[in-house]
Length: 172
Image 1 (cartoon, rainbow, N blue to C red):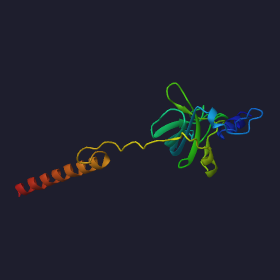
Image 2: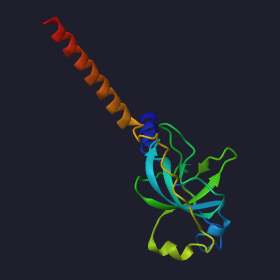
Image 3: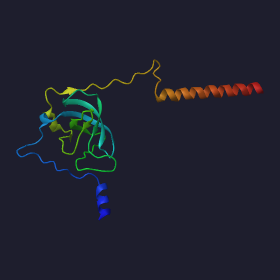
Image 4: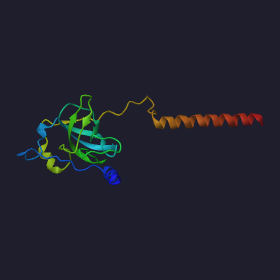
């Protein structure tokens, strides 16, 4: 029996019971705390944590062009029925809650859904586009970062090689 429980706990999240209140005909985005349109750039923690490139804010505070969304309550190898998973490269309309520390939280019972043409009709008139953050500042040569490091190491290697050949010629 114990092995069956272990096997089931590793099988992945179960479907959550997300019943709507009686008389509720469907998504009511106006009741959501934060609604954003964005594309998942990367996932982590068994696809429960998503790095999202934000395109539009439909509801809620201003935010940067890239945010982290936590889609569940568990971490590591444990799972709960409330966990939501995300797929990298997929565009979603996110229904999120914000914690006091600014963490964006999603779960299996939210209205988050992959983007489709039918959702265009739900876009509020006051939806705000999010400006893409400017590229990181570079030095005057534009050679900072990994490319600059490789070039610097290569230049030092050439100087040392040239010095070694110069010393060898003096010995001859």
